[in-house]
Length: 133
Image (cartoon, rainbow, N blue to C red; front, side):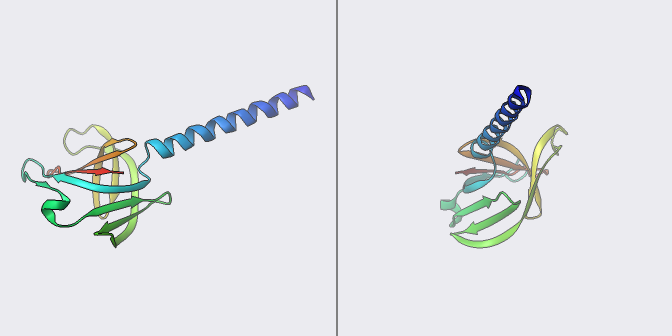
């Protein structure tokens, strides 16, 4: 009886530990959230910088827990599609990276933290797009 009780306590501790680790991951370094576009920087063959002020509109994307991405332009929904995150090779140096595919394009997740998301087009254009929460 003591062994069963001890086993039950150990199992409960393991589940509570796994739950707290998962919750932290989802809230602190997860793509799931609302991201507001800050700027885009064109690649080597097409250098430019675009911001909401220079291009004349705001943009935000919302990545959901169920694998959907909703895109807004000036706070009006313009797209609702699926996204997928997977490991894959970079177009530039063939190194393995986290890739995200949505709206028909694949991007390298260059950086992702609590407040910032930077993605780079995984093609020769290499446009870098910066979002903030």
